[in-house]
Image (cartoon, rainbow, N blue to C red; front, side, top):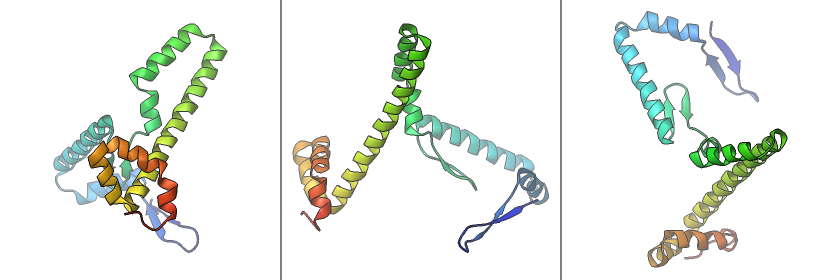
Length: 161
């Protein structure tokens, strides 16, 4: 049976369907079940391929999913090699502490990269001509670094063209 939930602060009424409701609706409404099953299988295959490639995967009626960057970095070959070497050289308690600190460091690194990309995108939005001139003259990486270092000046002022 479908449940109706209400968002707080006089929000919308949301009808939440259970698995049994969805299956019953499919049985009632779909005439050619083989075609529906083929569509569902194709969606599963496409979503798995997108996730494997590290891209966003859209799931109909559910939303978008992706593998978090921290999980990708922790499961990379480089991280596995570092953790394997640490496991071989350290005792049990030091290894657990090392693994915890390593995961925290990767989390901080991902946050800093996300912040860096955010600040550069804000700068480029305000001073796109300046960024393009720098990128054409010195390369895009150099332009991004310069834009990141100048971000406080530009984001506080109205324009720097």
